[in-house]
Length: 289
Image (cartoon, rainbow, N blue to C red; front, side):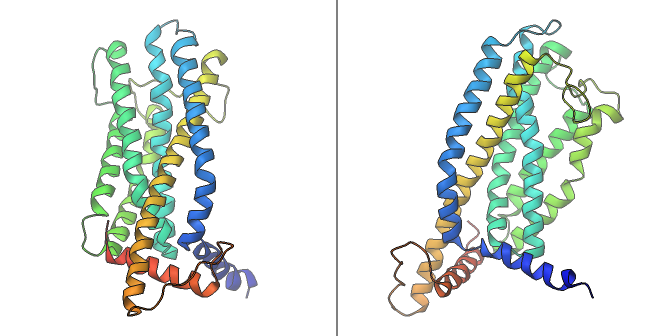
């Protein structure tokens, strides 16, 4: 029998569950979050200011094309955020990773916000180009379905008294909804749509001028960092809430025993790390919010 098939999966599971320690996640995210936030503010500001005020107007669309610098990055992050939600759902269903559950819960509202921004700015862009605020175009309709999938996930994970059932139901919905992502991507190729084809592809050169492409890409990276910073901050808050609940439950269960002392180095002993993970998981099952 192949040794990889025997050893590889348990090692992967142990590697993933090592990060289920809330203290370790808080330390890592605390170090990364300021850099994410600074990069998000700097790049988003640079990309939007460059695109909205200094990039050239389009020869056909005029200044209306400037909505692109807000709309297109939001559209990219709406789909990418849902893929992140699906990955967290796989980690939740396969490895029962508690941080994946919390991350999925926090990705849902953020992804819904970016999708709403995509739909709103697309409507503003479509009015002068198509003469209507909304058309039942394949691309627009599939993005609207994506928005409803986000909202459904947000509602479903909070719909059960047992949070574990909510996490599992939300994960299943997220994975079922993945089928919508290729529809969004290829809808302009599969059907006759009003929406223009992609100007940037992985297989060909971009069809827009570099003076418009660079601010768009910078804004997109800024949006990506913004999405990540918001999700990390929300997940940190959720972990701290669950951790406090778990430690209070552990203290109550010990019938007044003294709380463990934190080492001066800030590193938890293996026994304490295991206790924190157990308390963290118990608290997550105790409260859905």
